[in-house]
Length: 276
Ligand code: NAD
Image (cartoon, rainbow, N blue to C red; front, side):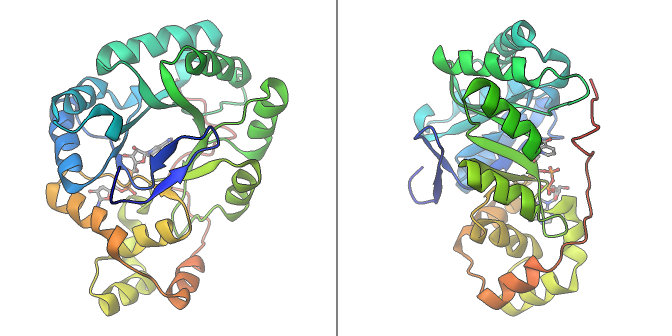
């Protein structure tokens, strides 16, 4: 993880600030995308059981010459396996597909408050960390009340909360709550799946800096201290996105981008989402 910024997790481990997202990457090309992402410089790969590509992802990690301990692999537990025993069993299935000895980060994908199983599920993740099969544990799409309950009932604070976050949905309050608890915020759909590229504010800054719109938006995440996991299957875009690490935005540009909040959510609301 040399030559790129890392963030310290509350369990003492470090992770690269920037990673490559794997949603909607077909399993047949996942190993190639992992290889291209590693070649571009990425050392964090963000997977999930529900993406259906853990086999290819794991193969890409196993086949590279880069040592395993220099790569940070995330995967996530899908909604239909919440509960203590179900989560432990489902983790084994993920590991079989990945073909790895451990994952660096395991996340509960959604809280699904209507099913009220996330505390029991969290206890399973604590057990997996104690057993050494997972290095760090965290959550995704958790709101303050869900985080507070996990901590009150188990005494264990998630290392990271991966949430929808982009300039149109900057999640200022949730970020502040994560910060108070010492939880790293990681931005999913950081490019708003492309819709932020149409913003005149983004385009103006990009033109002035000779950068792409994607690079400007990714740099905004990085300068806000967020971890960020853009997705692309194209080698040239992977390289372009990774090069956002070399950009620098002025305080004025950051302020302009911070002002783009429109409450535009591309994904579901975590309070009600319970898709199995
Ligand atoms: P994203 O914001 O990363 O946008 C991806 C889209 O932008 C793709 O269509 C891609 O072709 C395009 N793109 C990427 N780089 C570009 C560039 N340089 N120039 C032009 N276009 C470019 O959206 P995403 O894939 O939804 O999110 C990123 C990752 O976040 C996912 O792959 C996944 O790993 C994670 N995620 C997590 C959750 C969750 O619930 N935890 C939900 C959604 C996504």
